[in-house]
Amino acid sequence: MTNNHQRTLLVTGASGHMGRRVVEMLLEAQAGTIIAATRSPEKLADFARQGVIVRHADFNDPASLAEAFAGVDRLLLISTDALGEPGLRLRQHQTAVKAAETAGVNHVVYTSLVNPEPDSPVLIAPDHYGTEQALAASKLNWTVLRNNIYAEVLIPTLSQAAQTGQLFSAAGQGKTAYVTREDCARVAAAALAADFDGRRTLNVTGPEALSRTDLATIATQLTGKPVAYIPLELEAMVQGMVGAGLPRFVAELLASFDTGIAQGKFSAVSNAAQELTGRQPAHLADFLTAHKDQLLPTS
Image (cartoon, rainbow, N blue to C red; front, side):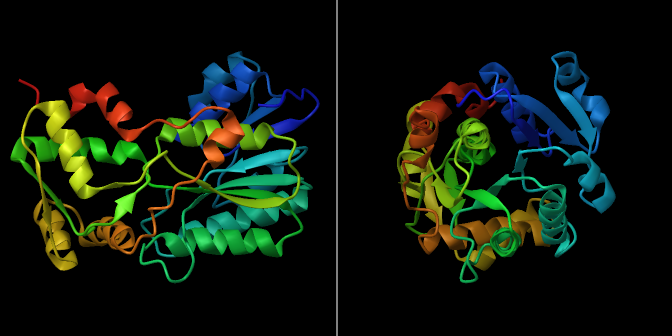
């Protein structure tokens, strides 16, 4: 990361997994004046003790965003978790883009999704595409980080597969270039602290794309328990998750990622992560090996 003590960098959602890690990385790099914005400032007392400026920011309150973004040079807009109400997350993001523009922020880094264009079957893709469109229509400079699917989501999935011996999915033979949340945080911190001031869109992926068959093989090797990939039709996948206790809208959202994988939306591998950070992102097998204890049933 570029050291620049004159600039003021702000991270939204700083009390969440991604935001907190980005702030930690910015502190380690002494990247400048750091502002951590959150709905819950009391959760960031540890950062305040380290010299981070903590500001209240509520994406449902435009006035709070305008106040939080005042005096900021570069801003990391981490996509919110408002998924329960259709359209809410996009409205929140659009509000944040307007607030950044009004506040005179020079550059916004946004955490998006790979291939969010209107032909994506992934149900949350319109939120990301709409936010990208809002940035494009603004006067802001920006970096859009199109993150692939987090490797972390595989831990409960493969743990269940190791217990049952079956990995169910509607992804067909599609492949995914899984990337760890840690690597996404490192990329976001680097992009926020960088000197780049134009407009760019980057895919953030792991170093290889793997199929469900590949995942079953890795799970078998790590756990010592045979795991077979069982392809399902989409509705059968949804029904299975609903039967396991998930609300139908959540099951449909998760299954829509399988459809995207089957269509090849998540298979492209990019070297953007290494170019931005100077480090190759983690291979999925290495990541899962480091979390092997979570894949095995507790005795």
